Length: 604
Image: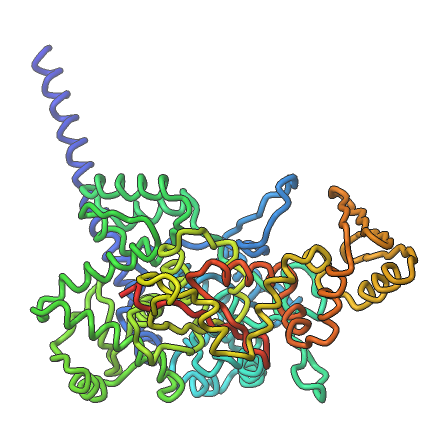
């Protein structure tokens, strides 16, 4: 009886062991089979040379279907509100939009760089091919970063029965500095398609703030006064990864014996909540956390990614030369993107560039961790734009003058400001945030010692002011921020007139400011402000405060910049300029571009 029991017991153990082995083997084989199946489905994209093998492999590897939301992830919410952001499956939403939704012809999908816009585009293309034949759509998928993007849009003959998926509006070199007009060009080119979907980074897509739209929509009105038509887009945002998404990704990307690495990554994410984790960074975390890494900022992560890549390039014995090549190539691809029509370079030109830079060129490997790849079309490019942007900023702060006063992308601005923030004793993150809505340029200067304090760098702000008389108004701004009337109201010509009469003619006035929900009582020596849902405010005034405030009536630059960036922007601009380490000066013609000056020497 005991022998029978033991036989059954050991047979059970054998069966369980066999089942576990089968599960492990299937866990290893299934992703490979799925990848091969997806690559088969994508043969049309590969043969059309729209996406390279490397980009496609990365897109389908450990893919986690994203969720969407109708509100921007950066939109401030009322903390007292009980309404939580609703996050729903984006694939299902797009199915409904293409199958049944006739409320709009254009759909806009917005997200930050690295959030997986291209991954979603490629995987939705696969999803569509897997649907029942009667439910499939003829999708034309076009990456806007390609030089031949317009040609690919115009090729299909049956446009009225096709759907156009334009991927990466922020990577369209024709859109830089010309977003509004370029968008209208693309819409005109695609006017015969049944529906059009566009992906873009959040702040790159143009907005028409003068046109009221319903929730979840964006409207682009006429740029030219002679035009009278507008386009309306349905608008969705990719939701940032939450802990469950991160877990799903790591379960899909990591093998069973990589549990210690998974634990290290989860611990890092849990203890560094201020560092945003996106699918792009997660794809490199495995290599970074196989070694003990000290990471305190997003820039540290990119440093580790680059370090890992450089160390594994077997053909390059002098790793410093590969680092130099990457940084110089990043600058060249960005600065000459308009000339080439794309952010890529052909092999012959790269060879000539390397000779000019004095860098011996060795073969570059193409694998899942590569940062520079050689595509099947024969060009070299960075595997992701984020890498190019980060390396450009590294070259900028190292003192490469060709990078100076060039308009930076939104992500480049974030990389640069983080470097500046880390080298500044005062936290200026809040002050820097408002700059994201404007074009940002940067200019590094050689630090010079002050005559007053030998060995101490001169005050950057005043050093620039002495050389640029056109920026004298920023010195006025410093005093205006300390003016209690301007600090509270900004420039208001009606208020100025009432103040004049109150001070010199002893009159009293009651002003209503409906946009602020304020009632303002003006007397000879004080201003009383009654604010709805806020604490009331009293400002004691004198002739000196008023005279300083009245000077603005003849200072058009201050009035114009106040209109462009608002009172809050002016206060933040002043705070940055008084930090002593940076200086931000606006373009006095457009007030839409700002140049950030810094002492380049301290970052070498």
